[in-house]
Length: 443
Image (tube, rainbow, N blue to C red):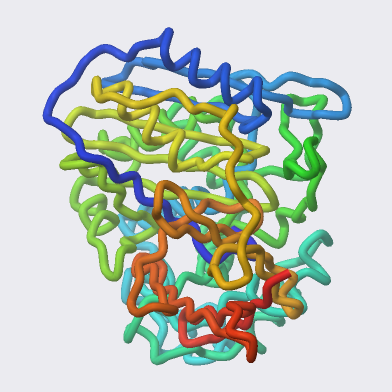
């Protein structure tokens, strides 16, 4: 969720129309390799037609205390929380307590353009409200408790990036505001509504609004892999995240949640159809993942160094979920391996004996770049001849060439322009997203 450029990944391989039983032995070998080489700490789950096909945990919930993770370890799921928030809002709409075209000004008139911004535009990130987690001062309070009043005061100072409804720009601000609106309508806390409206209906035993991480209660701390070891990272206070990223859960519970959603246990099929309707790659709290000719719906998440991915295919009632607290490996590759195995498609076990060449030449776009204002770092590298970019602790995403030095990633509306210095070396790039530019310099 926070200080990220991208919360969307695309699972894309050539896929045949066939199904076979999951090869548990091969998947175990795959995750044994990831664990042995300290590539991933987390949990995965495959769930199909009401049956848990495969679940597995790797690594530690607490590295210092040597507490091993298990399939019931709870991870912060970041922006997958937005799916829960969207479902609760759509439930309230079905109960006729609010409407999709209700105006934000009814609840928060001090927000710029609030009289033009609708609930639907908050849900599908077309409000134009600036993403507060991108602001320079965000890091000064992200680890401190914040009241709704404090956050709203921050939001009232944010600019409007564009005319509401005119374009898409991912903004956590939208879903924090939706959290507060849910609480105003129901006259109870978001946490209480989560339990009553979703957890009870979908039979989720290990899902709730998180607080201060307690590894003694089987909650995971997040880590970054640095200099050959796992190092603990920041811990965002979840009063800041709200319904944009405040839920903790397990991969098993998340599979049950998305299955219940598509089975009509949480909202009607008509309302689910609205969630699934994509505009600029985003629905109402939901995105679409292609896997060959199969179509999955769900969301990804990232907060601190937690990463997660949840997706569901209606055609064969298959859910796949990855949650984790430490990644030195692409979550996208893990998703491909899980689904390839499930559908009987070939995939190779990773060979970590071949060391990746990261001695980037100055005249190559590959390298580590930083932005001093935001503190964000982005690594640009090649993966099987595909140029990739990855913000620290977030999912890698592919870059498509527009010209020799300009690249794009259309799903998130990203443009990257590499720039040469006087010696002809590529030492900077300009990242453009949502009408804003950030300059990154090679370290």
